[in-house]
Length: 491
Image (cartoon, rainbow, N blue to C red; front, side, top):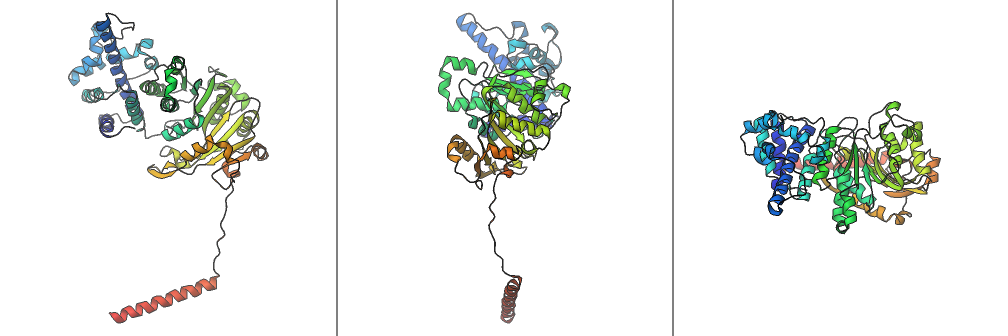
């Protein structure tokens, strides 16, 4: 987490965008992302130039040729605001009619993963003075250190204060981290988020590996896997895809496997590929049957995206693959045939391991919906003997729109208990965590809601009879009157 001066720098950049007329949070982040990428391109060219100077050659392909010098960050950052804006707004006739922004969009594979998702990108900064202020401030940011540049981008992303469309909103970082720690990513995992958003789950998984298993990165085979095919994501929103790509890149994941478009669409036929899926799919929304890949409807025939994503995740998991997925509470107890079908699939044909119920304020200020985390393993042969439940009451933040830091936090207890789940068998249903036999879930129509199984202990409270209470009130009133009379005599 960034603090102090760096935090103030990001706040100032954000405020400059807003006062400069760019008030949509996602637009701010996207424009910020483009400028960071331009600086990175120039920094990469500097390294290539240095290699040529020191070694006489470089094995890396040039990003800029000598004629494109004025499109480089190190050149235009020295210009006055108006001339700098010309580099972005006026095609340079001597450079094949390219602006600095056009150049970035036409790089393709040469510019790395991020530049491959530039189709449809638009430069939105209209003010020369705003462009100059932001360029000068970005130039001072410490973008060389992986942890620092990743944290500063995460801080910028945390400023998104509005929900997106179709139920999309940013998953709190501490909830993501809890899910990653519960799943304990392994060296050979192929990880995917089919509703990637800003790539929070993938980034958090990479951070977990750096913090918990730094020694893995000493092995060349794992390094190739980590920097190659380990991290996979799908995103329907092109703007979000660019933001996610930059987020991954700034966290040191420069070659993720990302797919643009709806993961539920007919053209997505990926099956039995990923060993770990972490996701918070869109809660709201419905698709026509002809828009959905047909195999998903065989598991549960529905138009609801939250149910379709569970079907999709089961299809994309390898045999033995595991998943942690956030779902709205309605998925747990919905009475429709589609709701029951997906729950029956998880309990009878796969191995449902845990249901972690979260309080409704976890996603505020974006939404007040109650949610739960489902943890399951794909077996295609059943295996659900009993399901572990946890009733999360606090996540370390107040459950109102302010989400202020508080002392109460069940997350450490959840992680500890799940890692030692064998010791949970003796816990009563009056406690925060307990087991429920799969047969009991079947008896209850595959209802997975915690309230169906949690027992509440009511303490008996004995009250005095009304006549006794009236006598006590009269006695208190008499004492009050006596004291009042005594006070009058003193005055």
